[in-house]
Length: 151
Image 1 (spheres, rainbow, N blue to C red):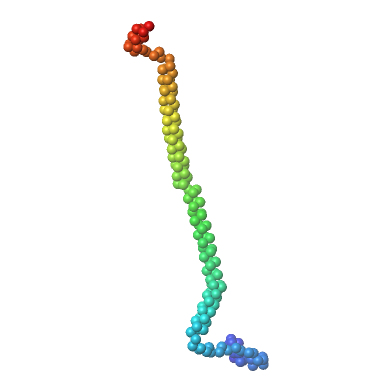
Image 2: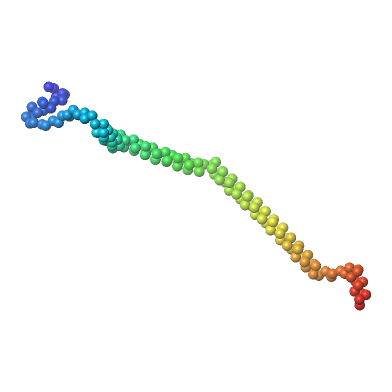
């Protein structure tokens, strides 16, 4: 036997002169019970899923997915910040501010115009009332004739 060959169990036993118990798999008995076979299949399936879930490969893939998602979110955040800081965004923001100012100015002008108009109408009405108080009520010719006759 060369150094590169792996010794068999029997050779190791012979070298050590010690009895090493070796468990050999006993052939599985076929009981013919479908229920027991389904239980065994279920246990095997659950064990396989558990092993797959706990495997280093799954953990490595999960870690890569998490890192990828963090990187993706970082890139999106960076792109949004760049867009916000871009000259085009600044121009749009400025134009929106100007439009808002013009709209507010137009609304103010309309309100001011309406207020001045209403004020002038009120003043005109009040002056009319005042004028009525100072104006001597002109008597109609028939009224003055009847007053002269009665006196």
